[in-house]
Amino acid sequence: MQIARKVFITGASSGIGQALARQYATPGAIIGLAARRPEELQLLAASLSCTAVCYPLDVTDAAALKLAGDDFIARFGPPDIVIANAGVSVGTLTEFAEDLAAIRRVMDVNLFGMAATFSPFMHAMRVAGAGRLVGIASVAGIRGLPGAEAYSASKAAAIAYLESLRLEMRGSGVKVVTICPGYIATPMTAINPYRMPFLLPAPEAAQRFARVIAQGKSYAVIPWQMGIVAKLLRLLPNVLYDRLFASAPRKPRNLSL
Image (cartoon, rainbow, N blue to C red; front, side, top):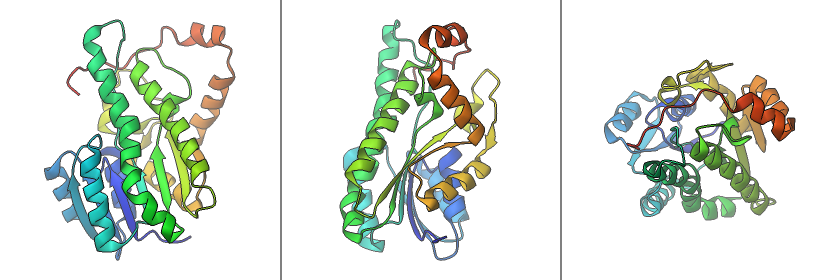
């Protein structure tokens, strides 16, 4: 298995992003850490046993990501792996007008932020003829969940976007990897007021993600048990799916994204 030496990760200050940074922080590695919270980024960078460069930014700011990407490439060359991990999750209800801003924010971060993350690196990686563009989607994008219109829609859009991107990059040497996590123990899932089957600790999830990325798989659901559940849910006819999930527990609404 080839060792990744240069990795750029968004949403790196906590949760899955932080676990991935620690997973890839082997001696000699170079990690680009991007997130909104500069203090947490600096603390993480100081704890890693490799070269770590901090890029405090919001992934909806394409200009800031362009500057970060240009800086990373100028200093270290094209990355081996770019992981678009930054994401937000919150309950939303379209019937409430005050939720519309949260819906837009979720779509901007989870979909546009992914494209804005990849864009600065793609030309250099295509010229190099190697690398991985990794998008962190979700099993929530496989079927719409009640009370999660924005989150489910954003992750479904991410899955379709990554599939299109994979076709565009075919033959370039750059592989596009779609990862759909189930429940991972992070601050994002800590607020869920319901049971989360097959919950994985973030470090274990990062190890599994890294294996999928190294193998260059086009699509993976992690953990595998959630992959089976997702396939079964996709096969359910609407009338049965609606009956089973209409009263499912909702993620809390939050208008302060």
